Image 1 (cartoon, rainbow, N blue to C red):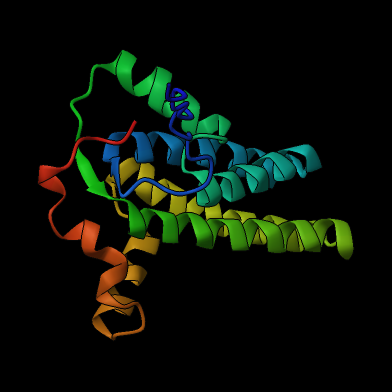
Image 2: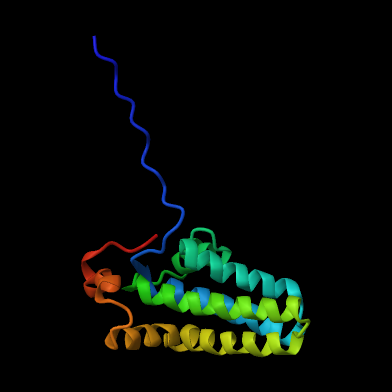
Length: 173
């Protein structure tokens, strides 16, 4: 008599960024970033800075999965607006989120490490400017930098193989 084989259910990937994303969800997240960043620049209220930095770090690490703005965009706003899915490569968007994470963490260090509120507001103002371009016009500065780095050979082509033909892939959740 053989013993039954017990298989574990497939693991849910916690960490990792989707290979492709919905452009409208990315722009919706950018809109939330603009609101948070502009609010911090105007008020200097530190909890807003912490939320902003957490969001960027969460999106770099897990895509929208652990990001409140990512969840709001993908699960609520974009579906309710009834926008069609517009696919775009995930790697450049993750790179852009990494720039946002770096800048927001610099702002956190300036604010809490050096009590340089004004300097942190300037850095967050830069984030607000870049996020405004993404939200309003679909112009992603981080994505443009990513493309230049690929063209110069700094980022290997293999990093963005999933970018090559996103039309054949299903939309990311």
